[in-house]
Image (cartoon, rainbow, N blue to C red; front, top):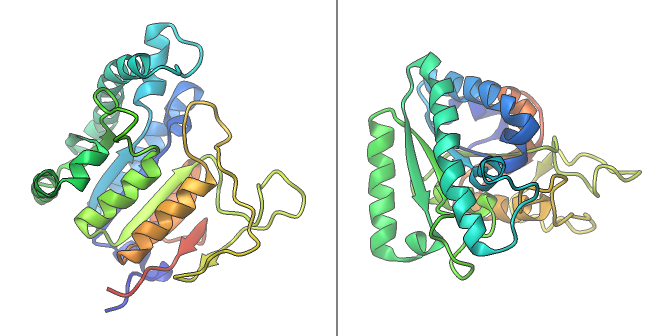
Length: 261
């Protein structure tokens, strides 16, 4: 059985969308509304939609009077505790327009590496989707330690896609696609399609994002895309501002071809 093709995105039965901290916090908090619009449109056509959202720490920072992302784990945990509550509230308030209910799912790497915890997480996700709830997943930053953290939510999103057998994973950031070199450099060209197993030789991949509140960049997205593609999930990498076009199947971003299932 072949995996999802790019021209069949609108037929995806199960979709994971991942959004980064910089896209939905600070001056970009207004992007939650169009993001929810796009998720609701996919939900309305019958797809089972999951959102993996970073942003708990970034959202909590102003309430702790922090001007920059804290370096120490305890303060990160405190910011996440405050920010996660506010973040979920903002999503639910926006989803209310569509009469869609969100369900919060917080995970650590240990949850998906322990077979019992993994099965419990899988069962909970399946039940939420069966009830037409929209799960909003984040790393459990309040209790996670350096040893068990996912490190970035791109990897978490790929693992959620694998856990739930998603047809499509959309990785969103502040960059519209993957490029042959950092897009601000001369000669950078957009990569439209990445065949399964392509090692992207000669491509210069940056390791950090443009904003200072997240932990991911092009490198983490490529790594996550490969994890998901290997499990049979088609992956689209694009900008948060293009999420509506992405879920509508328009030719935006970079497509990672999945392995056959």
